[in-house]
Picture 1 (cartoon, rainbow over the protein chains, first blue to last red):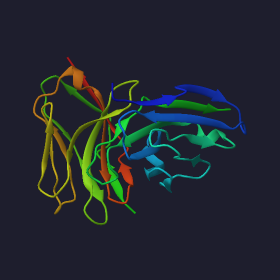
Picture 2 (spheres, rainbow over the protein chains, first blue to last red):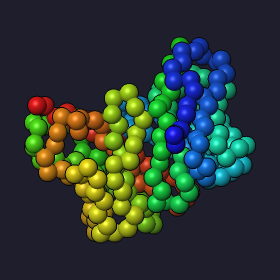
Picture 3 (cartoon, chains in turn orange, red):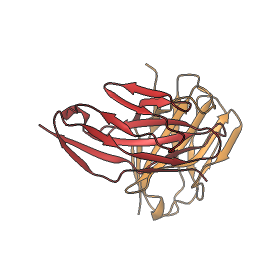
Picture 4 (cartoon, one colour):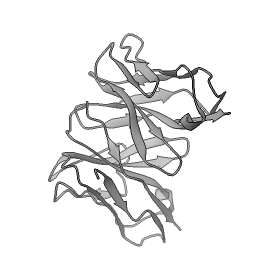
Length: 114
Length: 111
């Protein structure tokens, strides 16, 4: 089954404790991206990747890192999480990096930073 | 930068009512436009899209037309069902890889 898989789905952590949210897609998609969803703010793009070893900042990259060493994986790293990073995170992928492709989303990872 | 403005919610309708959710955008170049739907506890999924001016996207009775002159992409459905209750997001995407979403509109349809 074609899908985007995120882990963990739920996480409660404490300020400053490094964490990684993994994202994997099995559709051989070129493009991958991370978003955070906050009440009243919709989805905001954190980072995106047009292809392996190519990443770029979205609208809210501060406090996050990403890497794209393999086509299928695009982990989101929070080196020193803070409470303002408490949010619902979505990973998405698309067949191409052009503008016309639809995004396929994972089910989301709800992160709470205490 | 790019932006998407959606009609504020929440929207509550009776079954079989007509639905309109307004969406306007600001973007450089020629973006593609999308409507995504999010059901409770799930990720977003594509509802419909339009990739150039005057294109009409349609799916499951929903439709939206890419209007370049008014920079709009309003979502419409002639007769909503209880199962259409969800959050709807208008979005645009550019060749530069960036995508911009509206704030989302929560639709509740009552029997």
